[in-house]
Image 1: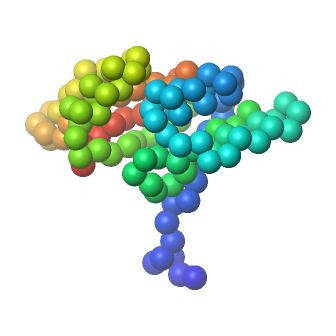
Image 2: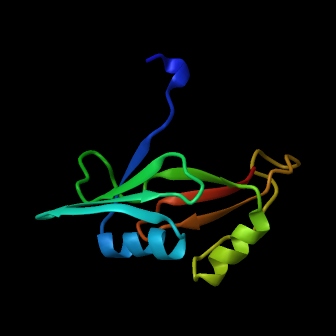
Image 3: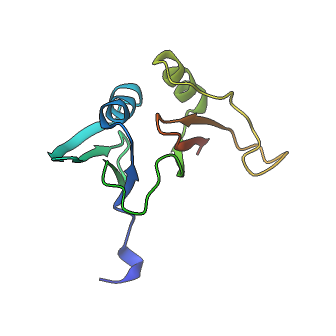
Length: 125
């Protein structure tokens, strides 16, 4: 294996209330649950995005992670459609802006926040 063929496989995110976090990602964002494993006070839920790529694992086993401290980016080729879809599902969305890289950049984006306060920027690709 070389670094040239490696890709991001998974991100792990600490959550405070698994049921609430799982509902947000699976029901509101429409991601697929790939596994749901609990062992006592430890709980993991694996999720895949509809477009593929790296998976997201929600966990109550925090280690050094603090819920609400992540800022992540999603890309979409249809920013307005994504905005309307999430809004219709009850996700709190900020207005679409066109200044991701500063005034005049023309890159459209909007922000959502999960139940723990982790920020997701949805960006026009």
